[in-house]
Image: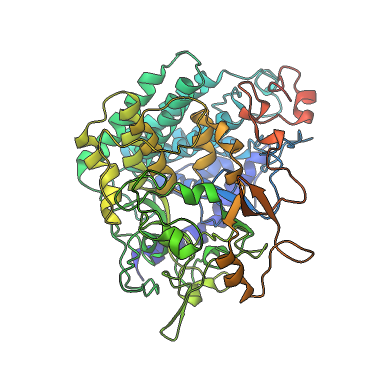
Length: 591
């Protein structure tokens, strides 16, 4: 049995035991559960390990709908949050974020691990894991709600003072999150020394850098002032932490190989980028910092089946963000852009990631019996929606698209994010030199054989509107992040931290492909028409016609897409029942 399979079996076999530990957190009087009791459990470091196993589900898991709620994608049903129709929930649940069971499970461990006998290093390794998980949970809380109550112990019904306390300030909780992550960095094993599949120092470093970049830029672009921790200090920490990882030499941007992926690329159209996301085994991949591992017949997921068939499609605005392969923005004079009469023209000469992310004739959609099949997009309302289906996480191997049979591994943290954090943080601090770009952004571009970014890039002739002025360098670093990390669930956080909701006012963030005579003829062969009683809906904009999923329900200039400086949506509302139960809590502004 391989080490990879052993870990999976350990996790599966211990889930029931760990579940018993976690379920005991629901009771304030810990009575015996058969022969297993709270009093007898905390004995060896293996007890700590088994408990920590039950928290690994907190980490990122395979999904085909990351970034669904953003300007990158259009869904078949409009998102009420993006149109300012989100309603205040009545009661707390995991779906609305005001959910504390997992944090209580972490604190339950942290109040009891001292009972265990063992070496300090071995014990602190698992304490580091649990504090890492608590930091992730609290990071989610403060992004959603701002100020939240900070708890360091599992509460019982008698802890009335803490149960009914007011919210702690966001910056106070942010400081605690950073403390948890720094403890994890200090006490977790070095990358390569950990048990396969478990957290290492560099996973904690990546999460720490992610947190610091988020609030370093959020404070800056929301003009918050420094508070207890300054924007510059946070950005410097993000840069320093990622410098450590870059300088370690442990990681690299990898050209994903074709072997074992079932992709069978067409000559002249290598899949060095997209192959990375359909790898059967990432355990030796130098871009992998932390992964979830899957094996057919042992542990699988369904991402390969859901991709391209989940009722979302990439937006016209996202498609227009791809540069030409030589680094020129498409609407600049002499760029060589061939226009968007059809997909072939639109993709010609562009950043090669465009044909590895979006379904097109140059990327096999499926391979059966050695035969490659590809097609031009999809405009079905249950599939591509926009004519630009995202196939980033789709393997052409048809076995991977069978129900619950996807077995390729999943990046929880990958090195590309580290490089993007480093470049952005240093650009924000005025420290981004050509050497920095060559160690970061240009590593990503080298993978797809694209021209390098320089410290003085040419200005985009038709830039997207952030609502404020931005240097050409930061503009291009943000563009690179948008392309490289698409569908990995970063985009809405990026828009919020950059104070960039102005971007959502662009109607092209809701449009699909342009309807041209060539497009009409192409889709007629698939029995697809546009407009009319049974045709796909379209809308006129600036003298052209575009596929528009919401043509019958939402105007393209709907006021709900416009965010004000004090818009209520910067934070989510607390459930009304919670405000009734605890009168020391207050509702977020505007709700």
